[in-house]
Image (cartoon, rainbow over all chains, first blue to last red; front, side, top):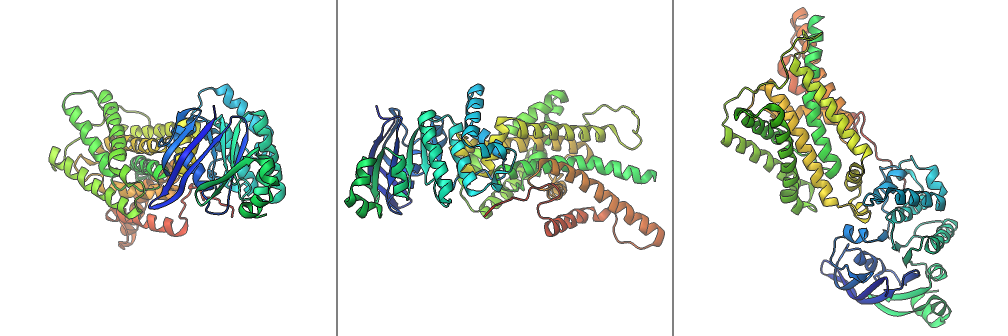
Length: 236
Length: 301
């Protein structure tokens, strides 16, 4: 059974329809990427899954329908969302940022284990643990955002442009750790990226969106090597 | 000298009340970013409820928790019913709603209990203790209760997961939702806590000023001044600010009187106490908008 199934998803911002029947499925364990140009509906798709926009159509997480439910309830099922803009609690310390995300979890030993895991992935956060999160650099805040999602103990992580606005070296490091998280912590990932080359490097399956519809999909290796797709949809 | 100490003592006692009210204002401000102008009237309403229970011969130690609990639920109810539909409304609409609430509770109290002033018995025992020449038992009780309440709230926000969730929800609601926090309930909880703190303030102040629907009007201004002096984002600062304002208003009046007696020149006196509070508000907003202990938000761009 797919971990996440999206069928005929339509999304609306007020009167404007942003998605026109998007369908895709995500097998457990893998990394899937949504590609497409600006305005294709990548971010909207992620936001729809988390109940942050008005939608039509079916969304099932682990077989359970989640469309129309409140964001916080969907998150509690095990969906970690690393939002566009990183969503840092700027006035809270790094430690508090991480603990907020674990607020709904009752198993304190598991929380402590995840905290240790996060610090192992991102040692810089451990060094900054008492610091106000607003004073972190962009890359550190992105690491914090991924860590916050991890502290939920998720089975699926939605990542919205984790490379945005970061230096290439930092991006490489973050992507390397995302691969480790996927493999070691067994967290499936749905990655939205404008940088298609980067995303195809990491993901094993890709969907290409154009103006709110899925126009093609396939294994990353196939998409990567198909020159026609690359030129017409991915722009490189 | 004796008189000066007495004035400071009285200032501290008044300050305790301002501190309570400032604390309630801060409570709502940190969770919703709004200044609740109806805070004073809610406290007055709670005080009337407590008075009513006392009139029905309910012992004070039962009446106070009951009123605090009821006020908590009233606060939660107001947020859920009145303010919930306005979550995305502009600030001005919300200010108008606060002023509406102010008049509603003022009129309700007037129509239920009338506008004649009523004596409210002090809950604290009339006993003599060292220093009772300067402080009455009620004053000491007020100060102790205020400090205890502050410590309890501080511990709640600083050390409990729920307190942390409330701070997170106040600061970045979208992110808090993504962390699984039920943001709407956190706001309601903030209102409930503020109303509960206000209820304590109301019942403490009632024995000093007599109970009547307009008793909180001036006191809210002092509380507001206290919250601003301490920093509207800092509960601890609000309490310090409240005490500071209480002492300051008395000292200004005292030295004004001294000046008048020695030179015959009248500049300030007891009549200008409220003006002092307003001057404090203006000076703080001009010179140090974040207050003495308020956090200046650090943002890296």
